[in-house]
Image 1: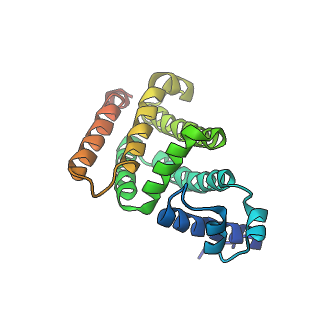
Image 2: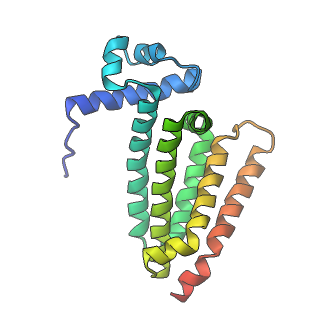
Image 3: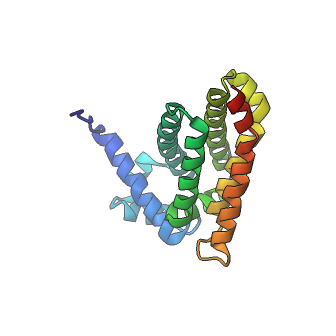
Length: 204
């Protein structure tokens, strides 16, 4: 059995703080939760909290880095599949369902809104999107047996559209009227976007 090495104490504490920050943001909203609220939720003094994260922007950057690790693991698994496009479709459908049900969806909707007002948050969110687009075009390259640069040229816009559509699900309340129909339309649009690549992948 493989033994997982624990995080160093400082990293473990930072991860715990991020988890508590997610909870505080879910309860009070991104703008509504003050640094004092975040410190209280983490069971820390404000001064000690600032040693880990001196600003909300720093928290957002750490949350993005944390979520990117999960996404990179997902994309690595997709690239190992015999049919990576089918695996990508399934992963996106699962992600849309998770965004709809989880409080993280509302958090990322608020962060997206904050990115329009705060350049540092906007830059971090843009970096995250670029990484996701890069991973997605790597899947397209693998599926079509084309160089990544060519896949980037041909289909990076497809990848960006898919990212926009998944983000739109986060901004739509799960209890809103016709929520299920809208989710189905989003997935339909994503699948049609991927259909542009599927015939090329089939030809090899």
